[in-house]
Structures are given as structure tokens and as C-alpha cells.
Amino acid sequence: GAVVSQHPSWVICKSGTSVKIECRSLDFQATTMFWYRQFPKQSLMLMATSNEGSKATYEQGVEKDKFLINHASLTLSTLTVTSAHPEDSSFYICSAGNPGRMNTEAFFGQGTRLTVV
Amino acid sequence: SQQGEEDPQALSIQEGENATMNCSYKTSINNLQWYRQNSGRGLVHLILIRSNEREKHSGRLRVTLDTSKKSSSLLITASRAADTASYFCATVYLGGTSYGKLTFGQGTILTVHP
Image (cartoon, rainbow over all chains, first blue to last red; front, side, top):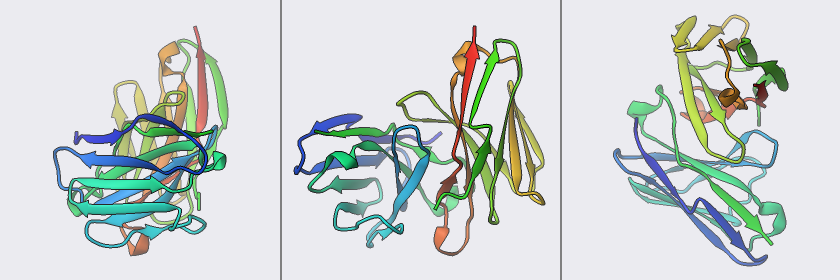
């Protein structure tokens, strides 16, 4: 299957600082990246969808100014959590895709566990 | 919004027994996927079933899909302690604004006792 690499796998940051998470598709062109968030003991919720070269589409209730998404190339998308607060502590995971792969298994990164102290 | 419902929310069985998890969804789908997640870790893809399929097998896994009832089930036969994990169903609809995104169910926590 396709390989999606997400970095870092875990990060601890101080409240008020910003954290950047990278998601790379290593062996295919990812025209679309999906960013999900999972709070402890809960399911995964889609935060936003980004298409290469255009602005991300955010799900209802997700603050676009707080969660900045950049998808400037076909192999890299980044999620920046700005002015992080303890309530942003969560598991963030990306998924990469393109039109030819949408009806196949999704390819996820390894996930990033963010802890804000 | 989360559309999938899974039941049971938690399942505890003995090694060697079969485990059945159910998933229901609300909208049209193109495919339904099952994932496993070990505590605090990433997702492992288990199996995908397309909307025109009714049943698929992969090793000890059997998945069924009933689009008329908007439901799916995952059966793990001869369970092992290593199967202990959370299991999620996720649906994909290739239409409208939701093109390609996965909508996850609430998940089933499976515990297999040695």
C-alpha cells in the first residue's frame, strides 16, 4: 500500500505556543489531504480537507484561524496548531488521497499525539 | 458530524471465541472500511467492502454489508489476545462536498482474555 509519513509522532508544548505537524505522501501524488482529530476514548472526527494549491475546507466547529493548514505541494501538507491550549491536546492524524484512490483503502499517517501543558 | 453507530461499544471475550461488531450509517456510501487501533496508536486498515459487495473475507475476518439496512458487521473468528484493540468502521461517499472523506463510527473496544 501507499506510504504516508507523519511527523512528529508525539509532541509536548507549552500553552500559548504553536506546533506544526507534517504529513507527507512518499510514493504517490496526494491531491487531497484529510486531517482528523481524536480525543481520548473517542472516535476520529474530520477537521478539514485540503486540496493541493487551494484553501482548506474546515468542518463545522473547527476554527480555521487556530488550525492552519497548508497544502502547497502534492506530497506535503502541514497542520499548525496556533496558540495551543490544554484543550487542544489530542491525537491528530492525516490521510492522503487522490481521485484515483478515493474508492480504495485510505492511507493514514502514523498520527501525532499532542500534549499541551 | 459523526454518522456511524457501532455496537457493542465494548466487547469482552475469551481467546478462541468469535467477536462480532456491528456498524450502522445514515447516508449513501461508495465503500465501508474497518480499522483497528491499538491504544494510543495509529490506524491499521483491515478490510474494505464496496457498496456493490455483500460479503468479503480476509484471513480470520469476515465483513458483511447490507446497503438496504445501512449496516455492516465485522466478524473476527478464533480471536486471540493480540486482537485486543478498538475497532472502527468508516464510510466513504464519493459525492458532493464530502468527496473522499471518511466518516467514522463510534468504535467498539474489544478485549480478548487469554
